[in-house]
Figure 1 (cartoon, helix red, strand yellow):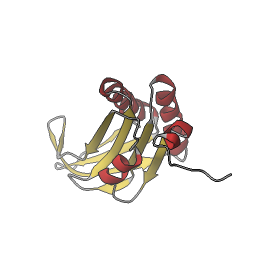
Figure 2: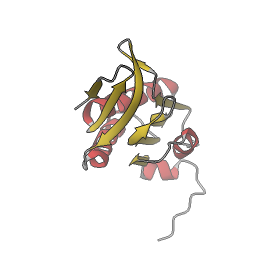
Figure 3: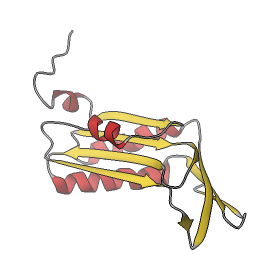
Figure 4: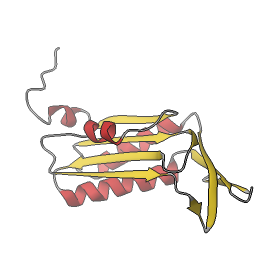
Length: 152
């Protein structure tokens, strides 16, 4: 059966989870934002996490992310919970792994909902649950040579 997308929002109603990925290539805000476009959504919330040059008062010299093989499956589980709890029209989340530089995008998530308040709430839940539950670990090397694993 051929799909007709003449009716805006039809795709989102069928499958609100539009993009989920854990990848070792640079992330794109435009890609994530584009993935959650929906004519029935009045609000889209987008969060971008970037690599900062400090943590806990110490200067960060290098940073890398590692992911467990189950990371994408866990990301899907987190996304499905958000979709179940909020009136999500469309959702997308991508997380970077590998070595990153200061200023690089580490994670980009977005959620579209009928109204702004629920879009903000759903996006916040998505990023908070992703950080807490998806097995992706940050390895920081500080300017003084010390190292730290975060989330491991």
